[in-house]
Length: 137
Image (cartoon, rainbow, N blue to C red; front, side):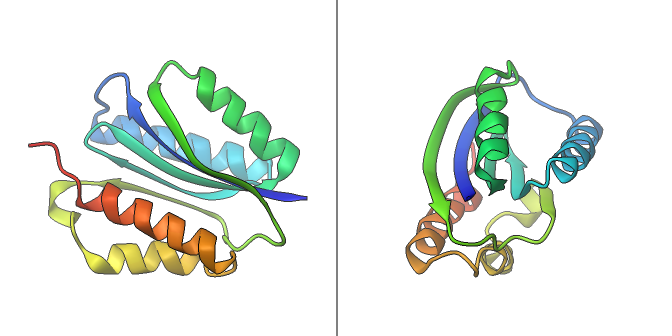
């Protein structure tokens, strides 16, 4: 059975550009080995992630994420079995002030979840809208 989880969280410390890129690369490789696809965004000390794959693997990964000291305030906004996966690979991006509020980003990420049911797509789009348009002032 395929499963999808979407969550947001707050980093317990600020990550530098090269550090976050190194983490992204390590996570991409590990998730690829586990056959987990997803979207992972990091912006101004916050993470947004969609995980998709075999139910047991996704739940095990999310359990590890919940115990990871680099996160706090983890809020799961979606967790459900899905008929089929829709993501192809694992997309990561460090969102910086120069690429905030770009509607094409939301469209690009939403294109990645087109295979999910329409309600799930709408939920993910609403969360993405908020995540990408919220800046710390």
